[in-house]
Image (cartoon, rainbow, N blue to C red; front, top):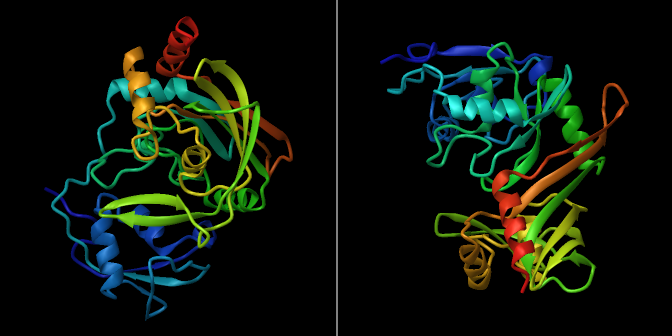
Length: 317
């Protein structure tokens, strides 16, 4: 059993340029490696964590020269890094789509969460920190649902992370997804429906609501298989579960979606001998904030998704 370096004493951390603009909770998650997220949020709420001698919220943005008081934190968990299986290490090595001095882009496998927590001990970012021990500042640029495969960006430096996220907020990153659905009519659809996050029990959900945030998705037919269709979605906004909810609201739910799908879609997949969320982050296009080069990355479909397509092509009905 071992403790964090801060297990028996208060420490004070002065924020440098590399952490400028970072949320307090994300800073502590990185600083207190191995400490459960629930514990981190508890010490913030209790006021044990201070920023410039004042209480702060988890969403507080840190600035250069801020001084963060970190209380003694004891954990019964071993501080050894999480174990990454040989199989996962090999999959991630093959999943690297693009890299330069500032960023990695991976083709995330379906079923792998982007980060640990909520019953998930090891996510993509934790695995990458083990596999790239020399990279001390790896951070997710954006998120993908656990069961969604495809393009995900990981910044190698904090400063570049902020530049990429700003570019995304300004609409400078084009994201396209491929999805398999039922009920898609015609060749093109635009969905403009505001989305609102809600909680049902312990589950986070999203629904269309006038009280929600404006959301736009453009859908284009790629290939039709009788009542099923392979469709490309281009995001005009980047809301949580946006494609999944807009597909459901438009009458063409995604196959294998356990939150927003349909029994008919589940039955169709089961008849083909498969079970997965048929949503894939197909491509990213953006102008590199540092080099100015236009970066275009395509993520190949995984074997399971390809097998579903092959089955549909041989069984059109």
